[in-house]
Length: 329
View 1 (cartoon, rainbow, N blue to C red):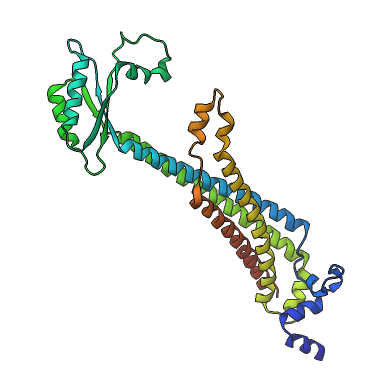
View 2: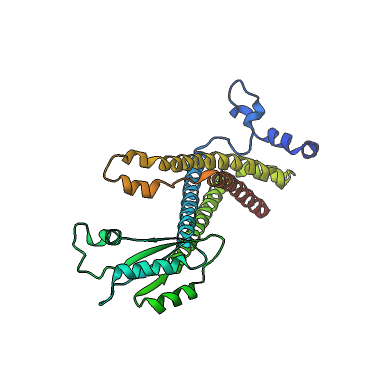
């Protein structure tokens, strides 16, 4: 009885050292370094590091992809919002060139329009080449003419007045403020955000389940020691903290590996288009990868995800240990 009382008066650290054999400590090291309740290195621990690294890698790639889509959508919306177009349809009995010139004069006289650029017949025909191909004679087709209007950033033009002036003098003229394209860009960006949040939620759920299984496995392996510590008076907080620190370390290692791999992948993708220089796919690669850079904000988000995954790993293990200790009678 006196021996037990003396042990219960000791600090929890000394209590754990007295119950766990120091024989497992590596030769030449302090024996107490090998007396942790949870072994620092195990097959289950290495497997959990791999799982956490994969989850962090996927989460970071998803975040980077979402940020790239949002940046591209913002850039496209900004470009579209700065321009409008007037479309002049060819009508029987009217001079199309005169109609284009008259529409351009009306646009230049409208306040809020900084520049007016009518497309020539050849430029209008080239706009149809992606669908009809090149080398076609389009003279017999009613190809409309386009007039691009560059808007003044400090003043919004009166679209109703512009449409009324065009309709009064030109029957085949229409004004497009690209509102439909802007709405599509916003819808695409919102869909990307929703999809990214959904994937991140799934990754976090998978991480929590993996850590919970790993923690229960560690508890089962070390259950005799945990039960003895619990029954002789070791605080539950001390026992839980051993698992908390162990899985926090695993979470940081796995999260760092996955995050660094994701950063490297995103950085490599940013220069990937250089491999296509001088090839037939140069224009397509430039369009796909020219703006593929998440910047400082993106890398900061990846670092934040590493910390988040490590925190989720540690908190999940602590919660599982606390629930297990509470079930011990």
